Length: 219
Image 1 (cartoon, rainbow, N blue to C red):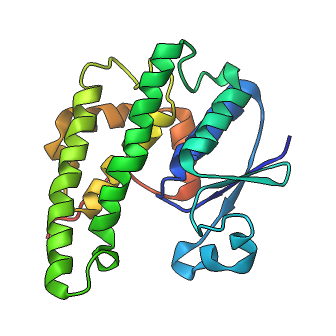
Image 2: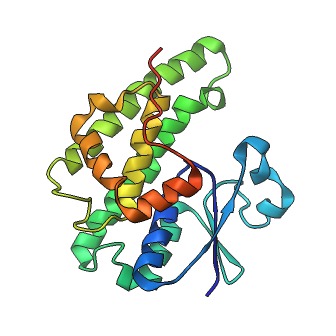
């Protein structure tokens, strides 16, 4: 099987990126990373739009067949490589894990999008400033919810091995720095993510993407 992951550094594509590193470590199945330079609009080029008509990352090519959307890619990876134990197998535990992963993707993630791109949601400068201000507050609430979820976890989100959830939690906390949220203001969350970034699959993905956790820049 040939798998190619199209990713952008620090984007939500980090989630399946870590998943693929876990699969590689546990099963030996390798993948080819394909960097998409968003700042150069490579996601808007015809050759990429032929893979992903939404002009987004991630995209996963499996034997030249494209699959898009974070949750769909994660679900396929989990079903295709059960030995990697990326999600719980028991029906109820699986549903709960999927619920949390979906919330990160469909609630926390779009909230951050309003932080970064208020011009997409309002026309006037005053309205854009209001969208941004409210989105920062709402995103902080999202991070606090994640912190509540992980406070009782002894090591990683699903147990003794990192998973998609840990990768998404890392991504969200990292994005918080761009929203002006100091990760140190969420101590339980930060302590958990410091464990996450020490895991080999996460370190490998971070090194390839050349990203660090702390993006907070106090002004």
